[in-house]
Length: 113
Image (tube, rainbow, N blue to C red):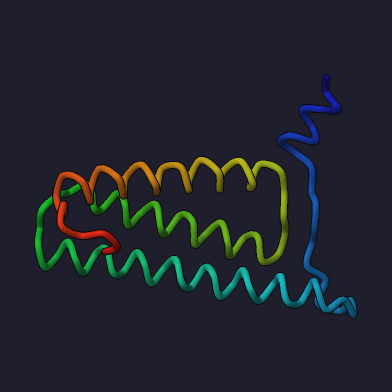
């Protein structure tokens, strides 16, 4: 059982090695950095929308969830671990849940933003 728990929560799957001559590693590293920047941009858009409309304080939590997802991508750019995968799964679940509530209750005519 402890081996299964180690794989599920403590396993390190990948580590970025800048000196390794592996194209996959470099592409994966930079993709995660760019993805993290994109999530920060989404957080900024949510904050700007909240400042403009002030419909729900829940939008601050929504923006924070985007920042947390960005942080996880920046972390993933250097190391991929089991606990990080679980964190990302919980975070994306929270993002979808918050989006559903905010769009349905405060922006019902919006389909994207």
